[in-house]
Image (cartoon, rainbow, N blue to C red; front, side, top):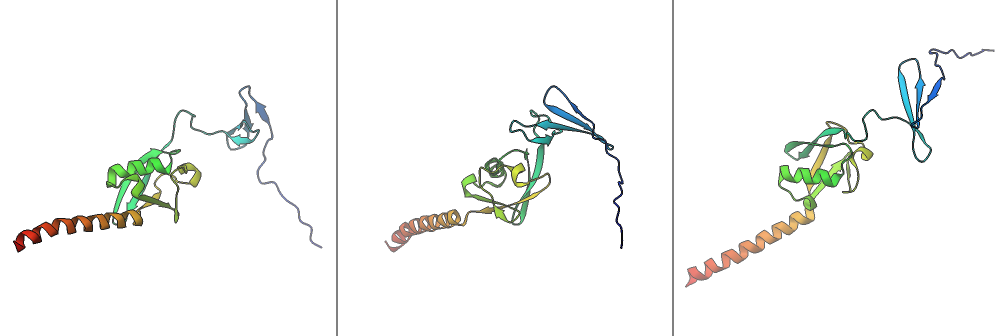
Length: 155
């Protein structure tokens, strides 16, 4: 019969200090980890950035052959990304479709909730329905413009 024993490779202390502001500091071997209690009662690791300071990320927007770099806040929405992309590409926000990780994203989704990080790539496509409407409108304008020329030539 084989007897197995587990060995502790690292010793961790379980000392926990409670501070008055709802944060809990745990002292481990590697460094200090600060914890906070959220309003729902969940214990989570305290964020490094302050609530007022929003982390800025740079996202590469690819439009087929062209790439553009846009800097946004990490907690921005895809609608805000469309607004920034419209300044660079010239497409109206309602004409754009943004794909991240193979899925089209809704306008009200937040970048950090979907997993967009610094230097990530987002694919920008023109909405095919709106593109078709534009082509039909241009074809209609061309027909109207060409018909008076023909009547003048015939006279």
